[in-house]
Image (cartoon, rainbow, N blue to C red):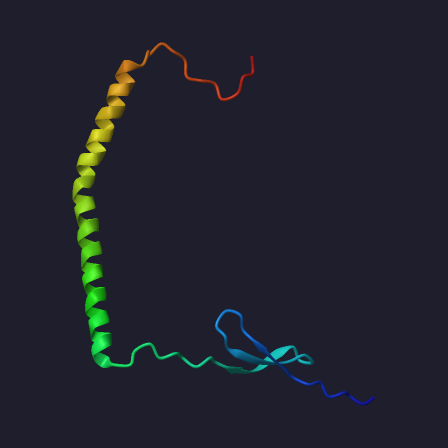
Length: 103
């Protein structure tokens, strides 16, 4: 019995855009050719300016998060006071609501 030569075929990856060469007989990828990287910067000074801008954005986000954490104690304290006030206003003899009406 003579084996027929199977022809490998090429497929473009939908995720990364790479070209894959696949052999259907052995069901394996024979080669992988990555998509060439697109150059985003033409000048080094533009890249440095973008890095400095990104650094400033990170610093601003950190300061905002830091202030939120500092005020977190006050927020939790006020929430606790509000819930305590609501608990005192409710009737303690009232039964809790039933999730299912079994009666």
